[in-house]
Length: 298
Image (cartoon, rainbow, N blue to C red):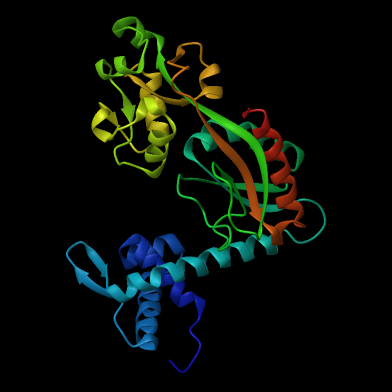
């Protein structure tokens, strides 16, 4: 490679990686399919190796392409962050703020906070990234993140807003049909809602709570890795599962089970990169999230 490669080539390359075809990438990027094809061919020529092979299901990435994916995603995040910063220039609070949060927090807690922000600052746009994967603030995958763990990087601005308490809950209809457990051993006779894959959270919870010692996915009769899916099963009366205590208080039909044996506080933090400290759009969003989430935590 004896010349600089333009970002548009990597952008099309990432589009094909994500969509699996030239046509899918063209639709996602808003350009023509031949243009995407030329970009990929030009990138392959510049790099000196193939990025995709054709198969019956579409374009399959080579090992080299997969090795480049993380770098291309970082470039995409940086370009998006640059655009958000550029469109916010000028007077007043305006532009886009990208906020990352877990599914449950994003769906059940953040909407009223976002509504209040929009009423106060109509020029502000909010992008909610709802995922249980920790978004990388250093690579600008998000401007602000709501995290259930203490941030480790020194370059982040972080505010602890309190603890979100987790507890076992069940719908009153389920308990009326199957009885209420009075001790942890009784849970073996109940339908338990939990994770499909054994997660770091489940292992940590098992260590922190003697009542869950030795639990694995086989203990759960109903399994899903989606927090929203677990909450929906709980509300439908399918069994006993974990729910944020503050959320359960909103619904009189949800009853806490074994509170003396199962309580797990999760530290809750609002974080952003320190380079955004003086950004008006990020500052008002950060402060609103801290205030709004403080009422949800203990």
